[in-house]
Image 1 (cartoon, one colour):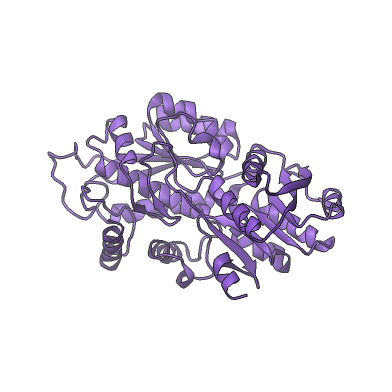
Image 2 (cartoon, rainbow, N blue to C red):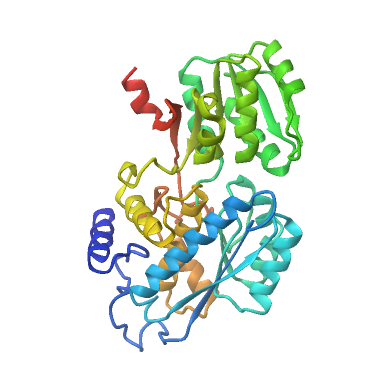
Length: 401
């Protein structure tokens, strides 16, 4: 089935310059004329909500999520919509706060009456809204990576990216394979940082010893004291966990203060601004991620990513500056795939059942399979290393050493 979906994606791309919402075995092609007697089809507009950190401390990522989602909607509508339905994306700013997220989701559910929602790129903001969408029986496909909002007993929560445990497992497995036995931890004192480090510690198990642990506040810009303590502990590797701007700044300060070893961390280390801001200080950084923004369209790791990037550049004039654009794009595409195959798009249980039937769907970050009911559709992530100012697959880098 994977080959069939990829083939159709490429055909649609050649004919109409679009790639989203590839159909599964029982799907109706977006470019075809649907049978009005099937699947409760009409030309009534489908509203999909999206909320994210469009302003606030993580505004760049939120902007990328919105652009990725809007691009997917544009391609879907140009291909005929979802079984004849045009799609509209209703976007709200959650202002990088859980309170803002609650207001946004309440409005999407109660006022806009959306059919489904693309959840924030901020996991705490998703966690603040899960009860709202659960009670309303509105599908929410989150763009945050915290493990906490899936596998939590919710029926209408799914994830459009890799659970943070997967990138964490990828870089921890690589670290163990390198023979590293003693590490230091340096992370932001927020829900994101704390939950991420909890995941990392569980993965380290008894194989790797944490010899020192330091935190910082999201508003901090000088980490000299914490870094000095870490260097004095003489770790074999340092694990960092924070948002992109914090990570870039910490890398510069680690190198400036004399640390020359490997730095490990989450998918945020794959954002292009890390290399742009940290410069040579980013070399030797190893991280896990579902996908990263490549140096060029031609460097994409699969055809779905390549087609999306080509369309993104055509639409916005440049490559995305964060892989969060992929999350917005994949989430919209997944929602449309479920809607296309639902027996009744006005029945939330029918949409949920269609989501659970997504079993081999090619997205940018990997092949999605939601059949286990956990809400997580991806089961693995990749490991990258920054070398010579570029993100390189670790396995390729190692093979060339």
